[in-house]
Length: 85
Image (cartoon, rainbow, N blue to C red):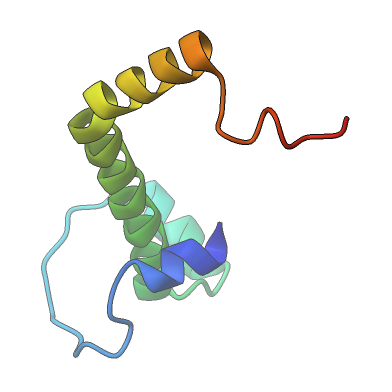
C-alpha cells in the first residue's frame, strides 16, 4: 500500500506552512520520541486522501460494477471456455 500512497500525490510539490491544533499530550509524546511530526502527518494525510479517492471511485462506478457482475453471473466470463482447469 505504501507505493500506492506515494503515487497518489506529487511528492516534489513545495511545502506549505499551516497551523494545526493537536492534542497537547500527544504532541508532547511525539516530541519526546523525536518524531518528525510533519512527516508523520504527511504520510497519514496521503493515506487518508488515497482512501477517500478510492471510496469516491467505487461510488462513482458502482452501477457499472453491478452491471458487469450481473453479466458475468448470467453469461460467464469471456475466458470460461478457454480454461483447462
